[in-house]
Each structure stands twice: as C-alpha cells, then as structure tokens.
Length: 189
Image 1: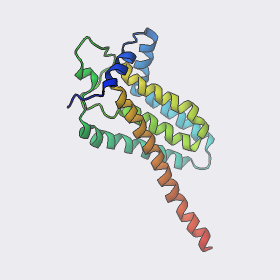
Image 2 (image 1 turned 45 degrees about the vertical axis):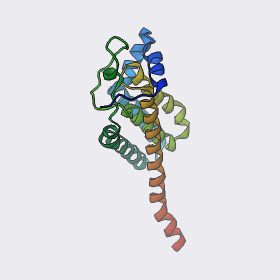
Image 3 (image 1 turned 90 degrees about the vertical axis):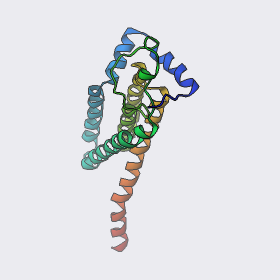
Image 4 (image 1 turned 90 degrees about the horizontal axis):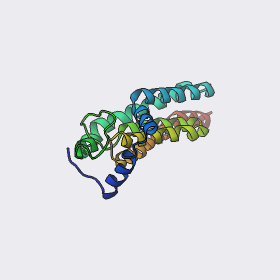
C-alpha cells in the first residue's frame, strides 16, 4: 500500500472527520454499515418495482449487473491497481477519529460510494424523479466513509463517479441491446 494524497484531501478529511457531533457520528456509523446500504438499496428497488410493472425483470437485471460489475472490478482491479492506503492506516493514531472498522485492502475508490451511486444511477434511469431521494442517500453513504475515518474525500468522489458511470453505461448498453432486435424486426416487417 502507498500513502499518497492530494493537499486538500487531508484538509477536507479533517474537517469532516473532526466534526465530533454525537448525532452526526451516529448517522455516519449507521450510513456506513452494509445493513443500511442493503436496506436503502432494497427499499428503493422495491419502490421502482412497484411502479415499473412492465419491465420488472429489466430493472432487477440492471441493478444486479451494475452492482456486480462495480463491486468486482473495483475490488479486484481498481483497488489493487491504485494500492492507496486508507487514512485510518496512514495517519498517526490520535490525530483523527476511527469510528468504524475497515480492512486494509486499499482505499481508492470507495466501493461503498461506488455501489451506492451505481444503484442510485441505475434506479434513476427507470424512475427519474427517484434521483431526488437516491442521490442524496448515496451522497450520505459516501460522506459517511470520510466521517468514520476510513476513506479520503477523493476516494469517495472517485467512487461516486465510477459507480454513476457504471450504472449509466449498463443502462445504455442494455437499452441498445434490448431495443435493437425490436427495431430490426419492425424494419423487416
């Protein structure tokens, strides 16, 4: 692992991580948990499935493929490639607050942020108004990772961009692939 960061990374990290507001710390710990991510993601998915009666399988496939691709490529390719040390391992003990455990497998990108934004982007394609709820929840999950002391701000920013890009790309490719055969059939008819 390498300890590399941009100058403003540590400044923004310290500002968010050093807030020390009891209820906000509790919110950061909650939003940083896998249980919260699963609950939020499944709740948003259930709402979209309730509204989207005609293409339920497409919605589920889109979300499943998006999360699988985001998580696998991030964990097995991006994190090892960048090999960036988490702040909880790079900074001297006592100079920051470490509120939630994290393994030392690399920091860039934040896969919590990537997966949260991947799901938010994917579901927002199916129900655009959902973006008003999904994106702020994804942002909360991303910022919580800085708040609990396990990611640099650029880790969560990179994760948010990466997850949004994967969610968008899967949608565009799937729509072209699924609609292309229909267009060909209509032309030949």
